[in-house]
Every structure is written in C-alpha cells, then in structure tokens.
Amino acid sequence: LSAVALVAIASATIAQDIVKVGGEAMYPAKNIVENAVNSKDHTTLVAAVKAADLVATLQTKGPFTVFAPTNAAFDKLPAGTVATLLKPENKGKLTAVLTYHVVAGKLSADAIIADIKKGNGKAVLTTVQGGKLTASLNGSRNIILTDENGNQSNVSIYDVNQSNGVIHVIDAVVLPKM
Image 1 (cartoon, rainbow, N blue to C red):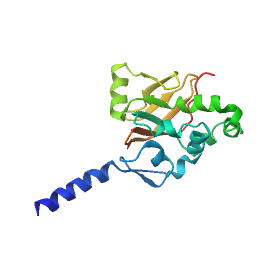
Image 2 (cartoon, rainbow, N blue to C red):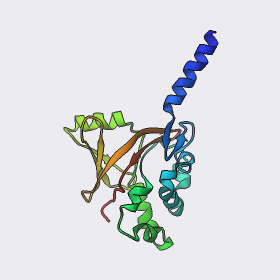
Image 3 (tube, one colour):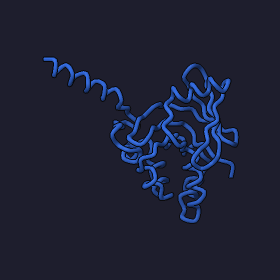
C-alpha cells in the first residue's frame, strides 16, 4: 500500500509540473524546441526559430529563459513584418529579434519578481542578443516586459519548465533597438 501511495504522490507531483500551452501539454523532461513545436499558439515562433537556424541552439543544455510570443503577438506587428523577417536575406535581423527573447539561465517567475522587488520595481535582464529587457510588475504577480523601444508585453503563462530552461509565454513581441 505504501508503494502505491508513493507512486500516486510522484504522479501528482509530475502532473503539477506539466503546463498546457496552445492546448498541448508541455513536458519538463523535453527541451524548449521539443515542447514548442507542439503548441498551436506558437507556430509562428517555431517557423521563425527554424528560419533563423536556432533549433540546434535551443536544443542544447542551456539553461535558457525564453519569453515566447504567441501567434497573436506576432499578428500585432505591422502588416508584412513577419513575412519580411522570414526572408533569407533578413536572417540576421530575425536572429536578433528572436535572441532578444532569450536570457541565459533559468529564471522562474518568482526569481524575476524577487529581482524586481530588489530593484525597487524594476529588474533589467540582459538578453542573449545583448540588449536589455526591463521587467516590472502590474499587481503582485503580473510581470510586464518593456523593450528598448518602450513597447510592453505581459507574461500570460509563467514557469513552463523545460529540460533546458523555462518558457514564459508573452502577449506581444519585444524588439531590440535596431
């Protein structure tokens, strides 16, 4: 009986770590790419990652914190922006935009919030692209990212744990100064 109880507890613990994104389960044992390709809400992001040849990088050990814009976030960009970025001649710009959404290390929502509180309301995150994102709070748990151009994005789903980091889903594309 105690073995059954342990299995039940272990199963419940694992189930709590599985978050649904785009209607699909995101498994902590899978890496960022293995999970992202299953999200119906991130098909544009996945296509962009493939076009920028970042798949192999995002499958490495990391760890990475990825602020993952939804398809709806990409749809908010001016008409033609995504199609233009996906052209082979714009691979450098596309790579800059995508790596601006990635921070080295695994930053949970609690860690980001703690940094915001330590920073008197703001935490500056250095992206893999080299630019800065400023995190702040709207309320006690709603993290807002502000890019270098003053545009803002809300984190809508927190702490989607991956084998090589964590994903936080965002509702707008953040852009570096270009």
